Every structure is written in C-alpha cells, then in structure tokens.
Length: 449
Image 1 (tube, rainbow, N blue to C red):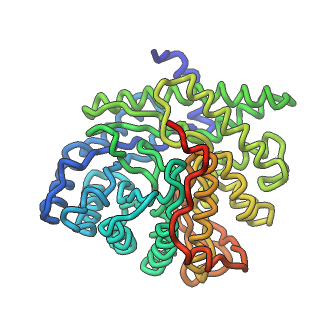
Image 2 (cartoon, rainbow, N blue to C red):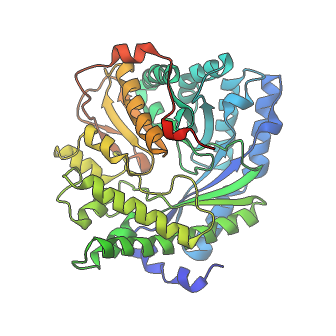
C-alpha cells in the first residue's frame, strides 16, 4: 500500500532536484481494428485513440496539479502496426491516422509503428519496414521501432542489413530538419512489450486493451543524494541510490494507479529509468562524476554505471510489485548535458559508449554521426549492440542519426531531444560481414525451458 507520508517527503526533490514523471503512456491494443480495407482500418484506429486516450492530457494535467508533481509527457503506444496493417497493406494511411489522432489528443508522440522480426521476416513485414522512412517523413509524432534480435532467437542479420538502409533513407527524407526522422526510429534486441518511453514503445501482443504505464525520472535527485554521503564507500553509495529509487518509484505508482482509474484503463507498470534532459543538474553523466570520475569516459565509468543501474533496479523492485519497461539508467548523448560535454572535450568516444551499454538500460541512444556514414557501418553498429543484448539477455538498442550533409560539429534538435555532437565512426568497414545476411544463432544459454 502506498504511504502518502513517503510521497510528501519527496517535495524537495520536485522543487529543487528536477524530479518528474517523465511520461504517462497509454498502451492500446489495435487488434480489434484490423480490416482488409485500409481506409476502414485507419479510421477505426483513429476512432479508438480518440475514444480511449482523448482525456489523457487533461487527466495527466489534473494529477500533476493535485500532487504538485510535474508530468512532462503524455503519450500513446499501440500494437505493432506491422501486424495491424498486414491485412490491408495500408501502413502509411495508418501512420497518418496515428499522427492525426496524436495532434487532436494533444500528446507529443505515439509509438508502435513497429515490427518484430528477430527470427525472420514475412514479405508483408518487409513491406512494412520499407514503409518506415516515408511514414516518419510524412508525420510529426509517430515513432517507429524494429526488433532484430533476441536471446531466444539470435540476430536476424537480414533485418540488420535492411535497418541500416532504412535509417539512411529516413535521414535523407528528413534532411531539411537535421534528419530528425532518425530520432524517432530505434532498432532493438530483446525489445520489451511494456516500455513507456519513446521512440521504442509499443503495446505487446501479451498486453491488455488499454493499459497505463508510467516512466519516472530523477537523475538530479540521485545526484543530490550522493552529494550528501560525504566520503562514503561504494556500498554506502549503492545503498543511498537504492533508497532514493525506492522513494521515486512510490511516486510513480501513485500517479500510474490514479491515471489508470480516471481513464478506465488497467495499471500496468512503473518504469523507473533515470532519463536525463539537456538541463544542467538533470544528468546521468553528472551522477557518475559525483561518484568519483573526473569525467564520464574515464576508466571506471562502466563500473560506476553498473553500480548505479543495479541500485536503481533494486530500489524500484522493493517499492512496487509492478516494475517493468526498461528500468535503469539511460545514456542518450543529445539528451544529457554531461554526456555532451564529455564528448566535446574528447573524454567519451563511441567505443566507450558501447562498452557502457553492457550494464545500462537500452544502448546507443540519440547518437549523431556523420551524414556520409555508410548503411553497412550503421548496420554493423546495430549488430554489435544487438550482440551485447543477446549474449547478456538484456534489452539493447540503437537510435543513431546520420545527419545528412554534416560531418562534424553539433546538430540542434530542440526540446527534450537537445543538441548532439556528431561523433566519429571507425574508418574501417564491415561491408562483407553485413552483406552475408542470414541469422547469427542464439547463444547456448538460451537453450532452456
């Protein structure tokens, strides 16, 4: 049972340390909208979003005012459109219907323009994936994802190869806006069905008809808590992070349950990920530096991130029986001012970021690279990240932005997406490896029931 006194103790976190509910996401099943006629299918999807999520923004705003807790984003996530649109083939029509409904509801993003092809692709799933660049270029709020690997299935290298081409085409079609379409596209291994965060959110086939999942955040809160430790050892640091995560998670569950009740939906999970923003003091990188690094990217960074991620998960699990999503620490470059500063001064490289993804939530996130980076190199980066996820039985992902026409400097996205330094990739290539295609088999430890 939630203890209101515990919630009240966190007021200073909200006031001074950037604590917020990062997103209330309504997950919707669209299987009842499947029709052979693409127009009917798109119309039914639009109608269901309006009917189920039409009050999402107003309910979120009312809860924020009631408890004094900032709720930054209100979002919708739907069943994978590769499945919903396969009967009609009207993928682009569905994307436009999702975008139209999102604008009318007043939400910032709608996720679920997604395909799950970790073991193989049907011809219709391939057609869907080929539609992604046009869908992202012709809409403002639609987000897309592709799951190309899992611990159980291995890595679908045909899908990995295709994903590299899709990212390059998306970058070109949105070149007039800093290739921002790629910021709405993520490629996963071990994608989860209840993730409330964009761009990789979708409503899994095992989920209910309408479910509320909440993503909380609080890098500034954790940083402030560590500052108060004053010379404690690593055990004390870990315990401090764990206790802080406990308090943050209780707030998230309070908001999630109330939103679910108001919207006549089921309460799903609390995702207790530490999601940074470009605001100073709201940075995961600065937490790691508070632990004892001169800069993120120094030797010891991966160990500090492991400790942070593990302690966050332990605190959350003690606070709620319904922890899900990704739950840990995000390390997106463009959305974290500490990461940006580390890259700018040469302390943090793409290789070090890859190493860090072995112990954090998700993976290479919001990474801007030169616009002339080849599709095969992008595919190789995806394959490397998928390998980390598949072998370690964790979710990993790549959200990479080859900024068309730019090879150095910074790119400005604005808002929560911030600004990103363009990071160098290797001068060598993996062209032959990517061209081979096929499937990398699942690891030996996946062979269990």
